[in-house]
Length: 392
Length: 175
Image (cartoon, rainbow over all chains, first blue to last red; front, side, top):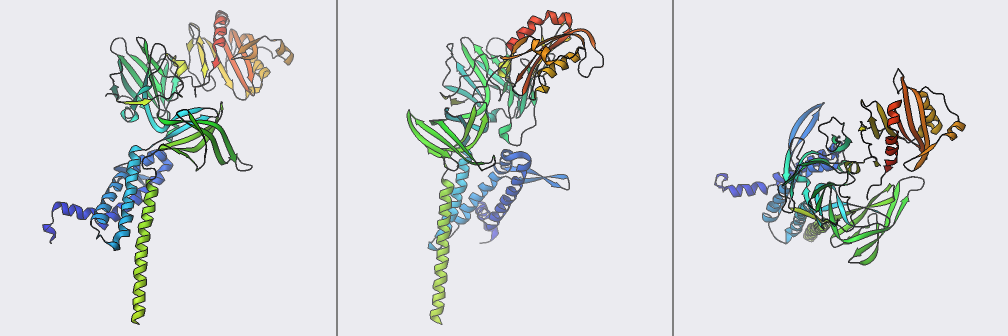
């Protein structure tokens, strides 16, 4: 068949299933892995991951002799998507099926499964910290990076609702000073206008003649920290009730107490904080043990003796480095510790990820596929050698 | 934009304080105090976490300072203040005779000095001034409250000084 007679879908399929595309994609993946790893030094882990690996495309500033040249590159998300379809078309659909190719097929399907695991993890994984003092219990963990504005209602007796309204960060992180967005809910007797987002900020007392001050305070922009966990976010809000005057407030991640809006007998507290997720069980820290390398302050081992509490039923557990507690799809790891005014605090990392074990299964399947392929080659080689000897 | 997302509130979560004052919300140095009526807040600094002024032209000042090293101890600080007012130094024995006042729960030496006041970095002394202050030590650290201004103005604001000192406290953040 001549090239001219090929239909458009068949041309697309030919490109998608080509070795050339596979080599191009893998080369770009190698390049962005290299550049993304180097960029961590300048922009930190989170921004590097978002810029180079969670993106469709990116502009990398190539430094040549002190001159920055903007270099457009495909992002990790796009490359992995193309790689997935390249393997689907080239190594699954186009490949001849039979016993001789079964190992290859298994290995390629397993790599596709690993890429799918990455996609599921990107969409559904939550990860956060649960710091606990000895004797303290908690059944929630808070995000390392995702900030939220939340509003919780309290009645006249001071009893709070068991759910809070949440404005996720993606809806206000673009609101630089000068930009504003108004949020509403059928459960709120007012609207909230958000503006002046600062990823890292300090709140200082305003001079008395400072007209930009709110309640005697003002937001000071601070240079972003390389590690996002160290950033302290702030926004300015204007509460617009259906009747009555508007109220302005500063929300700051490090504030001691939330801002309160009173409407009738009800109070609404508004704060900015890290996203918190509730666990289906509680963890109580009974004892934290820190072992150091002799003569140093370098940690050798952290161990937390905890009690897992599910519906009032208590179960003792030990969480230590590389030995997490798993339950109902949640994994509780020993992460670190800190020392504060209230004593030692054990810090756990809690992760839930539907594709948690998929990379392991994928690696096993890749290994099985490769072993089958190698054994087939070995058997064919040995049988050819035996035939040759028999002929001689 | 409509708010559509919610999150479950944990029973282990600390209940927030409703109707908190701005100072309670942003007390980044964990300090709480009440600014006396008629006084004003001036720009704070690391050396002066509470910095207030008073008087018709803000000629009186009152601030709290906390120094981790203590700045040489109680006697050295009292004598430094006396020198600023053009007064001779006291001895250890004189120090024991000075009255005491509580500053954030710690007993400190209460100092009253009249004289010509020379501020840090100033070349000329201001006559007929009064300085009130409390010097307290907390371990290695020193806690100081100092009020200075024209004598008549300081006399008129002595009750406000006492009220300010009594309102000072340290708060513990919620976990």
